[in-house]
Length: 478
Image: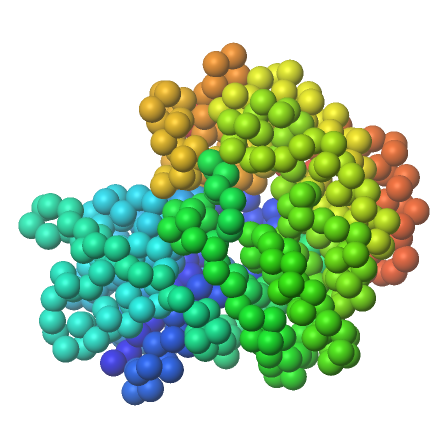
């Protein structure tokens, strides 16, 4: 049976192209690999419409040309307007084709997802085992109703089939089917590019041991944290080095440094094998230790991203982000002292935010003197605690489109807070970027660090993104 997995083209229609890199849809690559391993007779393909910049018509045309018996589409909240149109046009062209939606938006807003014409089911959370059973049911022409982990519409009613147990051993999963992806098209954003080498994203864990209100991790992975063994991760890296010549890796884990022994073992393996790679990862300020940083640097770590989120201890408490501000600044200093670049990010416009707390955030950002800083508009994705809080308090902005939920966007904020309406939050984000990146201290420090053509290109690309963020005028009310 023929199966097509689709990553829809989002940036072509969202109007924010150029705000970052282009990452491989590893969730679809994992689904394809899992299905291919267990059903070798299946004919599987992945269409990354985002990588090719396909129009609606081109996307539907490629679906028709492949003529699958089952179509799986990954969803995010900002892309759901686009997905709705793709599903509508696909259903018009292929009315008998069952469509399965998965990913964060399908999990966080399953009822809406199931109501789209042609959608047979929404997969909730982890998808490999569920999609395998869907494949068998479609092939054998049996009902999906007995498959756990689904939301379905039947006879106008929404039904949930019960929870799906998570995969206990992530090492049991095959490596993502990157051979089905246009690997040459993917690249890191300038904030995460640290060399001239071709880069690839990689996932070594699922979930996070923390439970911040705005994060999708709890919803997607049922509040559980699981990780692959260092040996398994290094085997994937060796495969990518040998097959694709990739030497730079961007770990997409929510908290790559969460398990000290695992991190130490990983670093020692990379060093002992002399892989000669460079990599970027995400961490928390309270998981930074000088001794570990030395091992990470030796193993090729070139940059660490920290989510500091706010300069206000009050706002951090509302976010359930248990961080100490002084510790955050100390962690940035320790990373820089280890010879590793550091990027920090902040969320502007969460519940509890005021103009005073935003000023505190800008001050903390300046004090950090990080190599890169991002100020994201707070976005309450469906399924998160932040969404529940905002909806119950009546803070969601009227006339929202799903594309407005992009955390890097030219649209105004998705929330109206007391004394801080959506338009003002958006203006504060732009003001924060200007305050940080146009400061003489930052400009001179970055110019002094230029060592190569790659540094110049990164600076130019980053500057273009910065100019687009702060000068594009779309302070619309929706």
